[in-house]
Image (cartoon, rainbow, N blue to C red; front, side, top):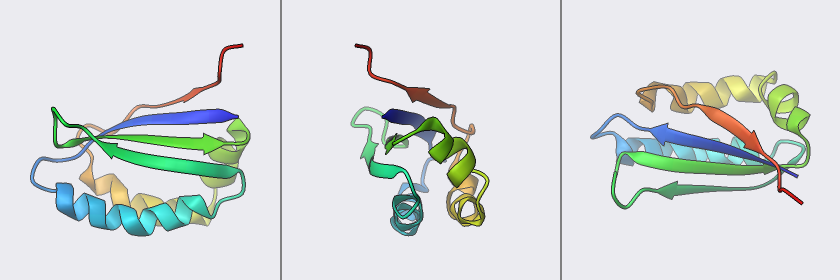
Length: 96
């Protein structure tokens, strides 16, 4: 299992718009092969900051299966214009 971690800095004042767009984006990524769960959390201290955690079965499910799909283009069109700066996405595995 691989956890995708993305800290999303949304342009201040656009949080409600972002959250509405994320409703549609959630359906896109949740339907992708290898995606087992996802959560979007809003920061208490910084209302324009969100934490996206997505559980993937394998790294390739995200980096190839999703990112190289037509579905990613829809995801990108829905969300990418809300970010400033663009988020750093990292992948994590549980340490035994």
